[in-house]
Image 1 (cartoon, helix red, strand yellow):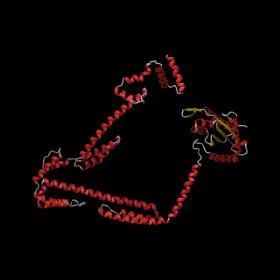
Image 2 (tube, rainbow, N blue to C red):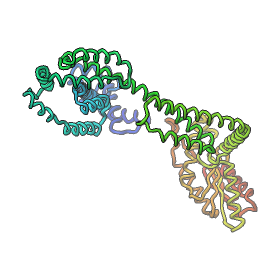
Image 3 (cartoon, one colour):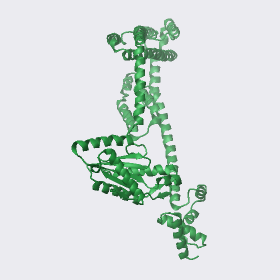
Image 4 (tube, helix red, strand yellow):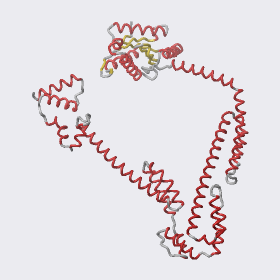
Amino acid sequence: MTTKEIIKNTLIRIQKEGRIATPLVYKSIFCQEAKSGNLNLEECYEFENIIKNLDKDIQSLIKANPKVKSIDSLITFLASKIESSHQFDHDELMASYLLLIKELLITLKNLKDEDVTFLAKDTIPKVNSLKDKNSVIFLKDKWSVQNQKIDYNWLNKVDRYIKPNKNSIKSVIEELLAYMDKNIPKEFSKNISSIFSTLLKPSISQDIKKDNEELLEILKKETAIISSRDFKKRVESVVNKRVELDRKEADRKAVEIGEIADILSLKILRVIEQNSSRHKDIKAIQNELGNIDADKINADELKGRLLKISSALDSEVEDLNIDLSKKQKEIEKLKIEINSLKSDLVEAKKEASEDFLTKTVTKRALDTEMERIEGLYLRHKSAYSVVFFDIDHFKGVNDKYGHDAGDKILSVFGNIMTHHARVEDIIGRYGGEEFLAILPETDSKGAVVFAEHIRLLVEKSKFVYQDLQLNITISCGVANRDEVLSKEDLVKKADERLYIAKESGRNRVVSTD
């Protein structure tokens, strides 16, 4: 087969398949024809030659992907593989950085520096949620401020007693304890034992009471033991236990009081919503709440006062419920009125002025507008015209291609009409495939110009449905108000001329009898 024959076959096939002869389409069909005619052209094997020069693993991936059939799809495929590979490496590296940061924060949290420990605890849960540069900079600035606050000059105060290695706090403490074991006076031990007795008394939680009593008993028997390292460890253990138990007890009481406060808030809101006439009673309860000074009373007393206020609110709610039950008949009456309004709303929606398919006005809206325009004509002799439009052979389109195709034509035609009409013109669907245009301040000649313009637009347009292009035409009947005695006669006259247009061969505008 010769090259000319292949070119001829290619053009015939493009025309037969109804495709647009773009360079890509032409090359694709040309190469198919060349291969079928056993004509080997190098430009038709570019894709296969590129594949041969790729790594075998990449070739296997391409063969497993049936969508990779051209150079463009190959480039897209390879780019996606490169991107996914880089993203995987980046994600792995970021995950490793986050784990390293978390370990560093845990180490800082365990330091015996209150501010650093607090900031580390606050930062740890935020590490995995760092999504952008600003959130990272925000945390970095907080740590920068903290670093500026750190001051270990207090270690210099131990120089009067010992000369430790100040690079290790542990070493400083151990040398200081050794110094105390040798040098603390007995009188000082007696004085500090009484201080320990006061400090170790239970504060919030009573669960530590037994441990405290045992420790104080040891102090009474042998005051000098206070300077021993074992006693120090035991005191640290008891103090840490006391702090932890106090914290848990305080948290428990705070949660309990918080729950009561939440209940009170809901009750106050409910009372306010149900009856505004009880504003004074609610104000009194709010004042009582406001007068509570949480710093001057303990948790149990605060809890008792809140429960008392809650009881007062319950009484208010009970009175409100009695009032509401008396008004039940009024509520039922309101429900009936609401249901009636809902029914009216449903009816109003049914009578909406816009045709859902063509987005033109409905027949009912056309009648309303005709009344308005007729009123202007009778009062001011403001002339107007109407045009009847009918889609030619519309039933045949429905029968041949289905109602979906017919709906598509109606929708597009409605769009053409509204798009090319004036703001003051009224375009509506009269029924089925018939449309009516009301043209204010327009004589018969102007109406013909408008109708002819729409007719030509429709004739030149291609109505596309799925893969079909349908040729559609319309017929038009024009009438002016000055020709007749009433608006009813005007619509009738336009309809008669539409009939003449269809009988005369369709695809035309008729404005005379």
